[in-house]
Amino acid sequence: MTENMIQVAEEYRATAQKKSNAHYKMSSLAGKKHMLLGVPAAIVAAVVGTTIFATLQSSKDSPELQIFTGLLSILASVLAALQTFFNYSEVASKHRDAAADYEAVRHELDCFILANAKEDSLQRPLEKLFEISKKMDEIRRSAPNIPDHIYDNARTQIASNPIFGVAK
Image (cartoon, rainbow, N blue to C red; front, top):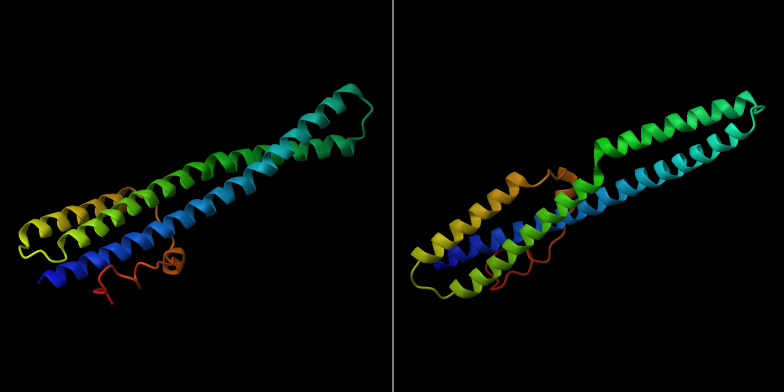
C-alpha cells in the first residue's frame, strides 16, 4: 500500500513539474508578445510626436505628409489600445506566479516522498498527500489557462526520473 501511495505522489510530482514548465513557457511567450506590441507602439508614438511638431512649424507641408502623420497617429493609438487590451505583462506575471506555485508543490512532494517511503502507517501520509492534492487544485483554479500544445510540449525530467524509481 505504501508503494501505491508513493507512486501517486510521484505522479503528482511529475504533473506539478510539467505544469510549472508550461507556465514558465507561457510567461516567456507573453513577455515576448508584450515587447512585440510595446516597442512598435512606443516608436510610432515618438515618430508621430516628432512629425506633428515639424508639421506645426511649417504650414506649407504637403497633404501627403499630413495624411501620413494622421495614419501614424491612428496606428499608435491602435497599438496602445491593443497593448492595454491584451495586457501581456500581467498575463506573464500570472503565469510566472503559477509556475512558482507548482514548483513549490513539487518541492513539497519531494520531501513527502523522502519522508514517507518507508512509513508503515498510512493515515498521516494520506492526509498530507490529500492536502497537497488540494493545493494543486487551488493553483489550477487560479492559474491562467495553458493551450494544449504548450502543455503537451512541456518537458520534464521528473517524469522519467522519480526519486525511488516507483513511477513509470
